[in-house]
Length: 351
Ligand code: DGJ
Image 1 (cartoon, rainbow, N blue to C red):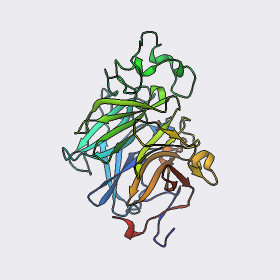
Image 2: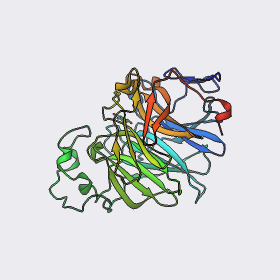
Image 3: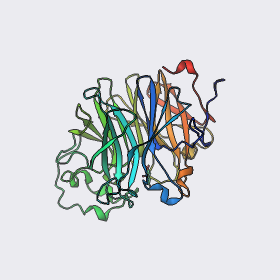
Image 4: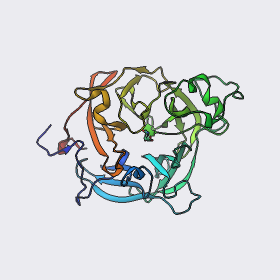
């Protein structure tokens, strides 16, 4: 904690006009000396889990004071559109693509019943939007993973016979093989750019049992066909991928719907693995439920790394709160996350 007034975690966070910040399951794009926060605009009640407006964005130069940019990807009134009002738009993440100059948004695009498991794609000429929806589809149709065998999928039961929470049935079948034809399921998702500028899409797949990491084309608009499975049958959601001192890290949650669970951490020296799981990185009171929150993203400011987490309120989604925690690194291959009441940075630390 510093003297600089920070943000009280889990309190109602207000923007510079004193309106409640509404950007859940979000992520930060650092661009041109400023920070853009994109997230799900939630509304009242249990219904509020559905998308009635779209993706909300905010801009800040200090990560504390936020200017409202409004809804930068709007739902439509066309019932045939994947982003029609009442659909689900979850976990939007945005990258700036140096090759094209465009801003590219990926999000979990699905229906009210959460069955479609597609990647929604939108682009903009400016980080302030507006973002134009380009479509929704599953990942890497026709491509086999780089780290799992080609096998016969003919005996795998159809998708409808599986549930998306932790269970034994999914483990008995190579679900990825079933989904080569139509593309891999994309649920909770994130984006990551490596030191060499190559971008990757990470998402919960195979009914949430297994993460996939898929390399993107240089324009960031598509997968290039190289993808691999990570932590098979570990049932991870809310995955955030980041890199520090040559080590790749994953911050994740378990699969318990909107209820908080113990976070998970993993480290690797190569993206494709092996990944070493080191259990719950949360420390201190409330660590067993990650302080009532679920991971959404990790961003860095200079040498410091911060996790963005959501305290979901399924009875009234608009009243879901934010918890941003600075990560601690007791060694090069581990991170920890302590419960602190404030999120704070001094102005001189903002680059
Ligand atoms: C957990 C996911 O992390 C959320 O984004 C959301 O999809 C809920 N599950 C829905 O139950």
